[in-house]
Amino acid sequence: MKIHVPPIKSQGIKTKLVPWIKSISPPNFNGKWIEPFMGTGVVGFNLAPNQATLCDTNPHLIKFYQAIASNEISPRRVKEYLYTEGATLLEKGEEHYYEIRERFNNEHAPLDFLFLNRACFNGMIRFNKKGGFNTPFCKKPQRFAQAYISKIVNQTSHISHTLSLKNFEFVCQSFEKTISKAKSSDIIYCDPPYIDRHADYFNGWDENMENALFDALSKTKSKFILSTWHHNDFRENKYINSIWNKFNILTREHFYHLGGSEKNRNPMVEALITNYDITINKEPEIKTQAQLTLCL
Image (cartoon, rainbow, N blue to C red):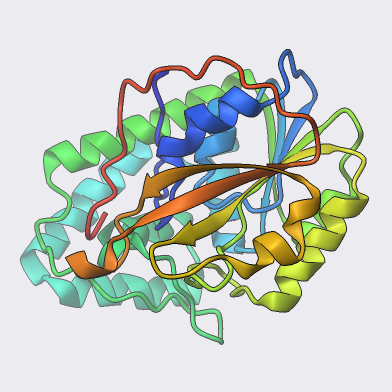
């Protein structure tokens, strides 16, 4: 199975887990694919059938994909923009990155969001309490070399092509509202920020939100798949046993390249949680692997 990586990246991207998620998805599913936590969208873009609703509380993420869907952002425009801004970055260095960051925080242009996402430190999408993007520069003025721009343009082109063939909508709203609108014929895929792990999310994540998600999924008539962490070498996810163990749980080890130093990059056991009986379909072979390295 070839995995297509979307143009917006983040820590914890589920590229390597897509085949596993596909293997437990209900067979012959043809309803609406719903994601309350779109994030990178890598799962939905690779697995969703003809209809999908991808939601997030980050308005900049939603605005970016709405712009691709409406053809406001095209692969050609991405190429021209990145060549121009990349050349200026090479000439001026990190000064230009912070100029773009300030411009984005004032004007919220989708292409500036893409630039910051691909030039910031460690691929982290972080915002301060005032809603301003505040991730520092990745210290690579040569960031937008021709090969890297071509890669991003190709990723944008694939998304553009996918959206031209399928009925996708992108909505900025809370996970509670998204889940409450799901029907019994739909499937909900949830990839919330991992509780007690990191807060690479527009509004953060805490115990109250984890419990609210549990309540919402417990009430839904839809089938759901939830991604979370189970344990690592140092501790366990206490919420697995305190709330999520009423559902079906599958686990497997996964290695995340998170953190600025090698010692912070440790294997972790992932969990997929469902509210339906799991039939393991044959898991496709991965032909490509995401390179989740420092300064994506």
